[in-house]
Image (cartoon, rainbow, N blue to C red; front, side, top):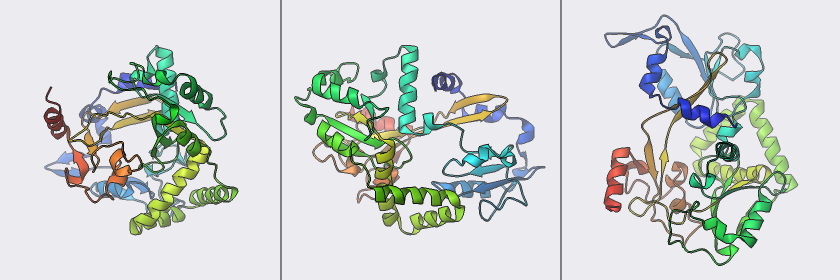
Length: 370
């Protein structure tokens, strides 16, 4: 993990056009009078998961790509050139059958795809390079209910004996921010450390006691057993995954409740990333936003690990005015589309709560003329 970020930084300068231009011509379909002709047929298998339907729509527009239908195990007739699945499957990296198959996961990629791994990797890199971590991210702690291999001791020490250090100049660009008088006046944002996405399980709380209460809630034996059985079932067969995927489409409210509950259970096992909440963020028309960027990370035995950063991106906005009076209001504090799309004011200010960079810059210029 120590060498990962410098490598990404050194390679993350190529645009998608440059990436394509560097590919071998023999790997690209020939284009003759707007008609695509290819001498080779590729086969793919898309398993259920987030945005799997988007991938299916894209691949269906490429006639040289053919789908392999049926359950995951049904690959005896045709060998897939590409397999996409929501979760990494260990057998893909062990069995010789998948040796020449393009996969959408990298081995040992927890340093990148989990909040815990990303935090530790970034912390290690900054330590190695002599960079002040607090100039990049707010004060952050990894906390677990077991207090093993986490930052609990540091978290307690800072809150109980050195509260002012949380609001040092290196950790906060606002010089006029008032330092809270007690540990229970500090606002924190808690995120499940791994195995969750789309904002599930994230919460904003006030005070050290509220953080500890959340972190130290350990799932009952019954809940842990149910969760373990659920995870094993999902790994046992793709048909179960497909059923779960269909349920998410047909009954989103019910499925969202299940995913939120699952996120809390995962956090009770894997811990939480606890960050000092930015109380005075940059806003768009008084509302929070985030920037969704794209990075392509590739790996092969011959060329090793490479990263490509896509120049364009988009901005996601919240549906409600920013306020610290209601910390439990997820539509105010979380900009995840999975959260915002359930708001009554979703799409009221921007179509789909999205802005491109030009629209975003115009809004910033209007809101902050100085």
